[in-house]
Length: 261
Image (cartoon, rainbow, N blue to C red):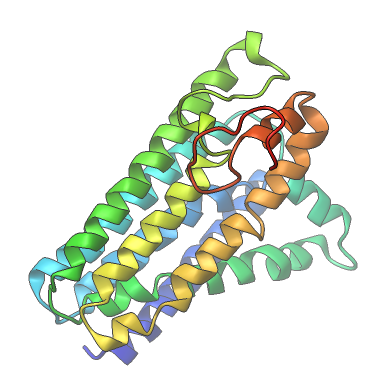
């Protein structure tokens, strides 16, 4: 099947996945289901592309396995984090701000944009499966692995920290969190830059550079880091001091007290 037909098929797959997710969310009365499905949606796109693509088997396997492993791990992590908790404060605010139908507003503000972003960010994964396995793909796998370790270890460290009642109201500043305020977001960005490098064996793959750029922007400047820090700065008394000494995104040695931020 041609790449254009593949792109159309994955777009349909995204619409189906999000339609099912929306229906489940309405039935549950909670919209944090979309958080779990975010990673799974990328896995579905990779699997659909693998079934339809015609590139070298080696690159097809790499471009499928890496996003599936990433997506499933993220889905499991977010499901465990949200299970048994009230609705996410983000979705509470979105519903409260709705003018007209709250459900239509949620679909328009959250589900449709996330579907479009999911499909666009996954372009390197889709294009890679129609190319050959070039030397730069090895660098891509290394970058992906670095990102996966940062994201998964960072999430694990934060989960352990949050599970201890003695840490309530305090700031995690050990482990990977000593070197960056967001090891999970940094790792997520690396994952998608790694997948982009896997796709760079062809000129068309290299042309998908805006996909990892968009993901990185969302994490560092969009709905990731800024929203998280806005909440933490108002709920953690020691967060301002943590910000002053810790890199905001890229892992760096902690700054000494009194050093410029």
